[in-house]
Length: 323
Image (cartoon, rainbow, N blue to C red; front, side, top):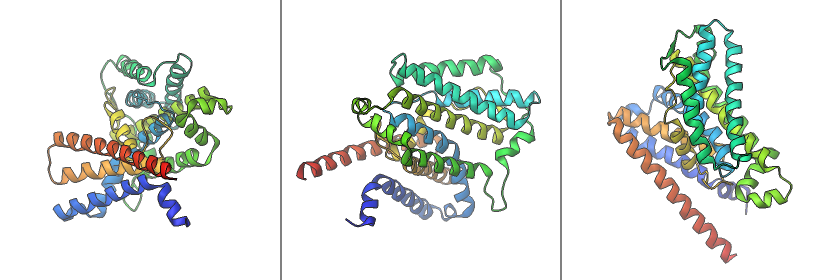
């Protein structure tokens, strides 16, 4: 088997997702030629940034065989926290750093609940979803924090000469760094091992708890960074921000090939999944399709992606039996 064939076999799901993006481009371009334009391409990149960053972190939680339903609430509480600090006159960079550290702390809480209290990830993060969201409401009294200064908004919201916002490059940087962590580092190897067979990983000397805790910290950090970027765009901290974002992040992971049981997935696939969802939503907007139908289409794609995973697993099992 040559290198090209090996690369294709190792990245089948990512290539299928990429093919899906191209098919979406072709379809919407046929329906409306304005879809194929530089301005629209930039819009898709911008639309995919927030979900892409959150989903990148979600990939780490899913790799352990877990899930983090609290990412939307973490996103919201960090938005509120940074908004409160910057409006109060704090240094914008310091406020950003504190906000990101706060997010890491929220991830640590999730990790400890899953590892030390032995709670199911679904239940643990479902609980912290409400707790974190409630804290955001208590801090703000349910009223958005307005008046975020331009000194903060300019950190991510600056536009470069080519028309691309800085936050798009932040998304690219996060994807590259997290991709390297997952595919080239010991932590990445441990994540695959824990998700693939936790007991075997334990017997091999892997500190299961520490691996999972780091996965949830990374997940919450990415959600916090996405919140910080969103705040720079909106200029106000709404405690409701991020509601439902956990579902879109999970969708991007599923479409990109992450196995919900853990042990399989990639950051590249997740990024492609986020781009596919963004390309689909932008196309439906251009065709003036009702927003309600977007939910139906997105849900259908998730089901198709899950079914494709089942078919792929069956084919791989048959091939192994023959060998």
